[in-house]
Length: 333
Image (cartoon, rainbow, N blue to C red; front, side):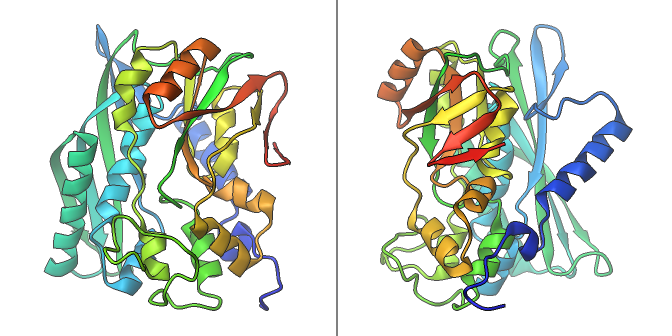
């Protein structure tokens, strides 16, 4: 493959359409599950008990290449806790599942440090976990977890945006923990993970000298959005979206509308690097990555302005009639 060939997520090994079809088959076999929901809700009387589960994905391969697993635990907690926040639920406890081909005290301690840091940032309790040694199943390691949350029934977001709603976005910290299969393939065409990152960027968590490596920029931990819950619950939030796998098409999980994005946050330099190195199209980038905006909320315009003023968010667009996401000249169905 030459540098001029256009790289897609499917070329890198992840076919989103095939993945969605497989998920739909699983959901169909299990029964009545709403795929638009970020968390499963169980009625326990005056409250909902909520559950979410997710993993770190192929970001672990970057950690393995650098020999640094100290932040992947943050990603594991973030990917779960943020899904609960997107439902209006407060995360309260977390359990992890670490599967390895052989045990290692060194990387287990590093993973534990990251989990502890993520739990502290999310303000949740680590209540247990499991380490499984499976050399015939796992090559290296895999890290996943499950998060439980609680919410008063009137605090849970309805989950459906309304035409006329404003969209408030909140910045990401970078690539977060999805799309790494594509990002890794692009980044390593002409670089090693240990090479200095060629653009002007800082990996805030990882590089004290302000001159991070390619791998450190890719490892920048997923931002945790639990700090938003208090502000969101004070307003008439109709729906929220955690921008993860599928990129900006995640907004369609807030309902079949047209989401017109007029003022998104700027994409961090890591996205420019991935796009340039992999010759990735604008559409593929926005269908795969958060492109600088990690969390989006749909709510009435008056509430949106006050939310933006009192947080680090800003009004990035509006909900109109239609069935697509319009951003940076693209139409994503």
